[in-house]
Image 1 (cartoon, protein in one colour):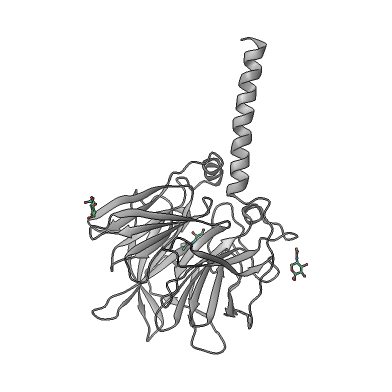
Image 2 (cartoon, rainbow, N blue to C red; image 1 turned 90 degrees about the vertical axis):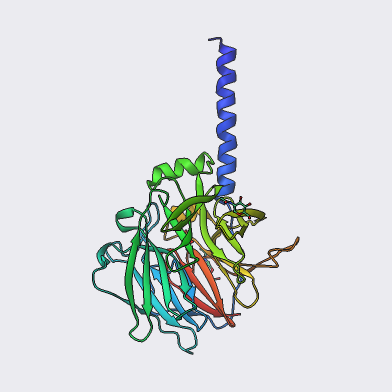
Length: 355
Ligand SMILES: *[C@@H]1O[C@H](CO)[C@@H](O)[C@H](O)[C@H]1NC(C)=O
Ligand SMILES: *[C@@H]1O[C@H](CO)[C@@H](O)[C@H](O)[C@H]1NC(C)=O
Ligand SMILES: CC(=O)N[C@H]1CO[C@H](CO)[C@@H](O)[C@@H]1O
């Protein structure tokens, strides 16, 4: 091979790598620093020290908080402690979350809860709690029935399916059916890193019901939080490293068709919708590098973003709370109840402030 050709090939390879690197650092916000934004009357939730990865609030103000996620590549402050689901009554002045009892027969030592969703049966007001679980780093979706008189989660069913290969979050649409995001093709940290570095868009949304399982959307860099509009006609999907929220119309046959994509700057994670206003809220990672490269001297921060008028031509995107990690590290979820804003994190505490 001629020297010139060799040089050309090396040049092309380096240029391609450089391009990947620029795109990768952009997708993971390696260099981003944020301005702090404060809110009044904040209280950290007592007893929650090992994450509050996802939060689901029932119309009556009871909140479920999943805690103790162990995830390849992310820090955990108590790796031997099984995951828990906390219950919190947001109508109380002093917030006192407590760990919910789970019925016998469920494998608690390997409980590793991730995204959650609730489904309320209109016939008899039964509350079903769907929890993404990673026992031994596999992916299942657990369905529980919530008995509010005894404050216990009764385990009904474990769902496993080859199409649900690495589930992140779910949104329940029936007592046994849901949409789920697969956030990476691989569970292995190195392979997920390679997948991200190459900018592969192999993550997707799967519809699951006992008789019908199929992919209904695809082409995300890292599909993560998923939720439904208050009127139940649209599905919103957060793409963390794509920095986008994709909006889909939900059809009677459960297919999804794309409506539009809203571009954000931050690494948005879990999504929620304010039932009163329709605003979309997300807990986000200001800087992806600090998240995966945990350093006590330079901790990952938190950023809570509200998107108003998401269906209009000009959605209003506002950073409502931002902190450098001195109070709250690695925010993932933000949920509103009245004038209260509840904020969850991957592996740190949970915070409630007034709006
Ligand atoms: C589902 O319904 C939509 C809208 O009516 C239609 O466009 C689509 O082809 C249907 N998909 C399937 C898989 O039947
Ligand atoms: C974070 O903010 C706090 C309070 O505003 C400040 O005291 C602290 O030095 C900041 N930490 C870093 C790492 O910037
Ligand atoms: C419910 C949900 O989307 N959970 C995500 C929230 O944030 C964490 C941290 O990145 C994700 O890993 C979860 O998948």
